[in-house]
Length: 307
Image (cartoon, rainbow, N blue to C red):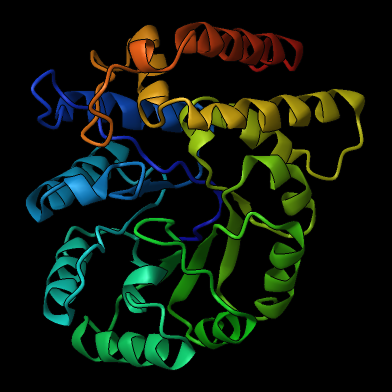
């Protein structure tokens, strides 16, 4: 299966007691698929992996895979530990769920930001310990620090046939363009994660979008991906709307995205383990802001005959 297109970084619904809401997760999985997603990224930063046990990361991944029923691919990470031995344990556990690709987090391959030689050595050491038929991807997760790949490292990873996707967090269009060129003759797909450059990155060869607002309106991102070669004024209006909406990430994400799903009935609670405060109190008028985004999304859906 090809890992490209609209790839939501999945939320983890919780009960009021901050236990994983697996029924809500199943409904959320269906919502992503019903709204134009091409693959799902389970056990990622948006899933709150640093606040999940390995057992929870594995069960979340299994639940998503079971719920998709083969409709679209599922990739997963759960790659959070510092030590080699525990990294092997967690990555092997995710592999054993049957995920279509296991995603390596770049800052875990170079935890002290020591450079290319250390990253390559750690990656090659992992390869010797992981299953030989494993399919891999990369994610420049910004926590605990954003470890962007150099051009040399991009070319290096692209030389491995089983390396199939990079969730690009450079947030820079020129960098995306270089990466697309560097990986042109490889299996490695570059998928941008920044809303502000999403459309231009798609036009430049980014194979989709994997930003956080796929949790709000993945169908609209799917539309601009499908029409990435269009110069229609309506497309440009939509692109501007998506870019501005993406700025709302700073108002208590992931809870703001969870609040939308509470409003539409996907699950019951918008709390997270990452943010302890109620975002309706901490971020003034956040619910009203979200309502504007939801209403704007629906207006575009009506104009584009998506609903």
